[in-house]
Length: 412
Image (cartoon, rainbow, N blue to C red; front, side, top):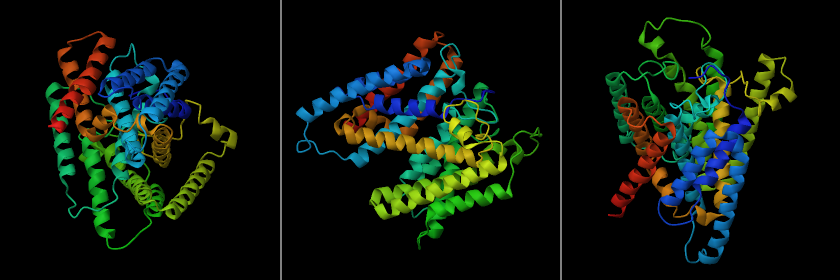
């Protein structure tokens, strides 16, 4: 956790764009070229000032790859599913960033503290973990399950209890300001899935414009509640001990509705619906702007635009999951969506049959779980104290060794 104000919005947009470009490197079959892209992301996170030069380098590699694809791989020989490939690219990009950061942040000599999770306000790279998983899960919620309690929810709950037991056994230090004392990342994802499943079961018989419902839920919730995240309070009861996680359930339920609505229109190519969706999103942004100016009358339009590149952002609060954090989560998710779609349109064969992208995208929870295991092993054993070597071994174990094992199993 960091007491600093975090990163700027433009800086985070640049990181997401660069990570998308680097994940699309596909110079040869196999995992190696993808691993080179992951090492480039690791390098940029250490040297954020060099992101412009690194972006140019990766863009050049992609252009070379695109030219090669145009000559050697025509669409008649290898048909490309841009819709599927771009979603795989987006999903693999976001989870790779999360996996790199959760290990790298423990080594302060190579980690930029601006990317730490914010305590009370601000935006940061480490704050996008739950929104990332929520976005990719909600985007695929185009069909309702007959059962509310799915195997995915059971799996997430099992992982949550496993993480809780491991932390207590190893006495690993976890800040309660993230999700509370007992709740954790996996429990929160399971709760989000369960809430959306109950909602879909109720409204499955008739159509509702979920974006409008989500916006109304957000508006009503924030008018009826107020999170005292700046006040000191005793964590005497279970509810108070886990207030951060509990308070975020309703906002992320609304987040799920908005993203799932977008995913449904996108999958079925309902362009009229997409136009309505965009108009509704604009109305939501206008509503947010009116709330900002009403609550912070001293902020001018110019100062609002400056929020894109200023690091001191007091409007967004991850801990209290306020409306600005939900809007920020939507913005960063859609930036990743647009970037991955653009890359797949410009260079479709850079992503199609990309072994690393496919492995990470199809094994998101396994990759994330492996990352958590790597952190626990590193902390409990201290096998490699050198920061750079430890991170490279960690990344190689997850993305090369685990990737090789999973791809071998699938081929069999």
